[in-house]
Image (tube, rainbow, N blue to C red; front, side):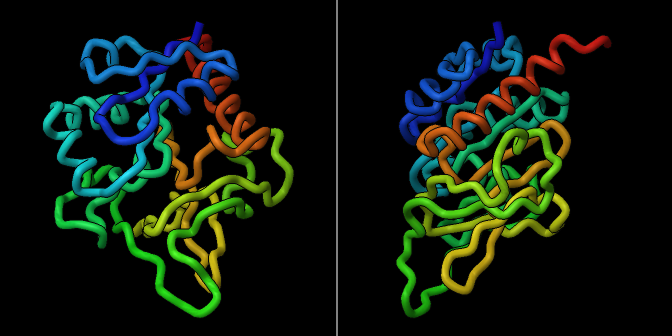
Length: 213
């Protein structure tokens, strides 16, 4: 049984993420308990909403240090949507400092003729790290579901695992660094492609759990 702690910080529909994880055989638990984060095989940080309220809630629930420690310990960690953005240093959306786990900034899409902001709906991922385990079993340039007005801009381009193009702007859509992966799109709303991505994450957790120490 693969236990996954889904962090509750009162931002977004946690139940959709849990349903997706359950469909691929994991046992998710919505929690803000330090003990639960420590016991879980992996951690998922979902989120919908605005940057400043999100990081305030993380800090109000004393979750910042446990999140950092879990990632530093090598525990598999998946950020989704806002859960990707708050891993960065700062955002053009607000004034609060982010968690600073990934150096870089969250930026707003530039207005240009013919595109809408927010970037909302189905769009194609372009893999920059096509061999990453998160992408196993996916076709080239799979379509996934986005809803966002801001995107992450990492200082180190090597952490970018996939990009997406909206209008003339090609931006980071997923990052990967060691045990940490995070995506701007919603895998739980991305049909079979999204379930495959969640299954790949869960399978990676299992492989780590059963590998010799």
